Every structure is written in C-alpha cells, then in structure tokens.
Image 1 (cartoon, rainbow, N blue to C red):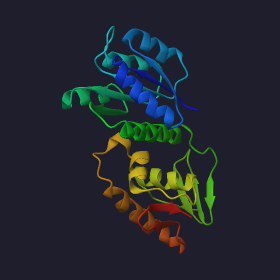
Image 2: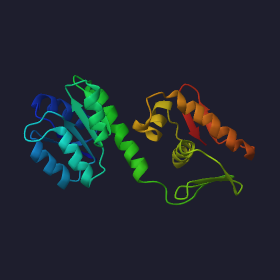
Image 3: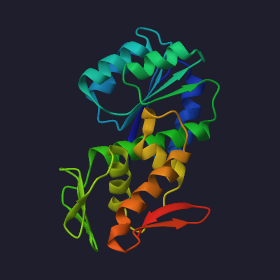
Image 4: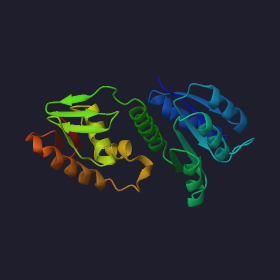
Length: 223
C-alpha cells in the first residue's frame, strides 16, 4: 500500500482528499502546518506528497524546494490561485503536477495514480535486455536492434518503445502513454503519440514482423 502525505491547512479539503485516496487503496497522512509537514516529508517513507501553497509556518514553494534537495518523490501542488506564474514557479522548483482549487477529488486521484505509475516506470527500468522475436532492447545502453543490427531511434521513440516492451501484451491508451513517456516535458497534445508510434513501426518494419498493434478505440500494445 502506497503512503501519501497531504500538507494542507484546510481540514475539510484535506479530509475530502484523504477519503477519496483511501477509497482507492492508498494510506494517507495529513499535516496542517508547513514546518511539521516538511519534517514528516523528509523523514517519512511516503510515495507521493500533496502540498498546498498557502500554509502556516512555511509556504508550499519552500517545502517543494527542500524536498527536492533530498528526495525525488513525486509532488503535486494545490493552489487557490490560477496564475501561470505560480504554476511555473512550482514546476520550476521540482513539483510534478499543479492543480488549482476548486478541483475534482476524482481528478486528483487520477493524477496521483498517473504520477506514481510514471515515477515507478522511470525509477525501476528493466535491467536486462528485452528480447521479443527479432527485436532486442537494451535499456542501459539505450539501443534497439533488429536481428542484431541497430535501428536509429530518437530519445522519445526509444522511451516509448521501451515502455511498451516492458509491459508486453498490455494495452495502453494514448493518454497513458503520453503521461508515462512525455510527462510535463510536453504541452499536452496526445496526438504526438500516434505520430511516434507510426515512426517506430516504420523503423521496425525491416524485420518483416509486426510488433506494435493498434487496439481500436483503446490504444496500443506491443505483442
């Protein structure tokens, strides 16, 4: 069970977040003070932090900055402000996501799951070469080969192929692939996933085999 720390001084909002997260299988802790919340974040074994910006004792920006000095644990910032400058500042300090109040608790849960899934995928890459028929992928050297001959892939093409190959026969939607591979590095256009899939298919076509399959109305899988 993954543990989440909520640092939020509004007890009603914190309780609502906790209820939705616990209903989805998470263990949740709440701290309503900035300084004590930071101490718990730095000394606990949490899988993700949800941090409000306006807090007594220490604001959320400073909490994120100090967390990032010690940990890479995912952080979602919550704010009553919708200003771009606050979002840019928060993300620049190392936050993984930013939500503006009021928000849907169900959306918060979805974002928590997405951030945890992406973090797990990035921090736990396969250590051995992945071999699927004539295709071999080496995560450490970031190379992909067909029948022993290397194929040239861009960074994102390789990341996308590696992710699909790490979960063979599992279907992912465009939105899931975009979140896992691109994350906050892109502007949010999931159509780029289809473009990259097509390019990867063209480069793998020299094998005469089909690796990436389209599951209509759902997404893609590497079979």
